[in-house]
Image 1 (cartoon, one colour):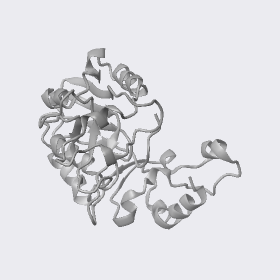
Image 2 (tube, rainbow, N blue to C red):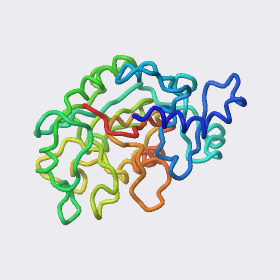
Image 3 (cartoon, rainbow, N blue to C red):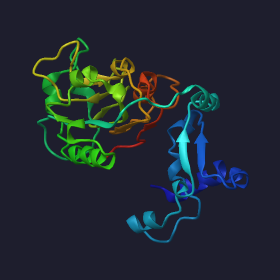
Image 4 (cartoon, rainbow, N blue to C red):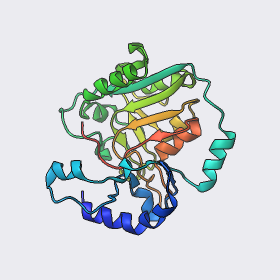
Length: 272
C-alpha cells in the first residue's frame, strides 16, 4: 500500500476541510467518479513513518483513527434516511450464511475466476461451483459474530444449510444484523454476465430457484428490516461493471433495495 500517495491524497481532498471539523467524529462521504472506488478510511493524515513492512502500517496515522466514516450515494440520501427510515422491528439479533460446501483446493482469497462458472444458457455450472476453494474460516467468523451479538448457534447457516433456497425461504425481516461470508462474484468479470452475486452451497442439480449463486436480482427481492448487512467477500464495494456505473456494487444496492439501512463492504480481495 502506497502510504506516501495516500498521504498526498489526504492533503488534496480532506485536509482543506479539517478546520471545519472541530468536534466532529463521524464523516459522511459522497464520492464522485474515480473517488467512488477510494476507501477514504485508509487515507493517511501524517507523513508516513520511516519504518518498513507491517511495522510501518502499525505506526501509520490512518484517517479511520480520527473519524468514523460512512459513504452515501448522495447528500439527499442522508436526509431521507433520517426522516423516513423507521427503527427496525426485527426481534432477533443476528443471522449468518457462509462456509459453503465446496470441494476445491484450500487456500487463496474469497474471490473467484468466473470464466467457468456459467453454461451457455446463462445458468450456473454446478460442477464448476463445487470445485471452488472451500472457506472453513468463514464458519469461525460467523460463529464469533453470533456470540458477540448474543445469537444462538442455530442462527448460523453453514455447509449444506448455506443455500440460495435457504436464504430465499428464511424470514430475514426478523434479523437486525445479517452477514454473508463467502466467495463474491463481481459483475463484469465474465462477458455477458453483468450481475454480481454471492456463492452459496450448490445443489446436485441447478434450478431456476437455486443455481448456487445468490444474485443481485434475487437479493433485491428479499424482505429485510436490518440495521446492518455485512458482505464479507472480495470487492463487494466494486462498481457493478456497467459503463459509467455509480458507487457501490450491484450487491450493495440490492441489499439497500431489500431493506438494509447500512452495509459493510470491501474494496479489495479478502484473504481467507
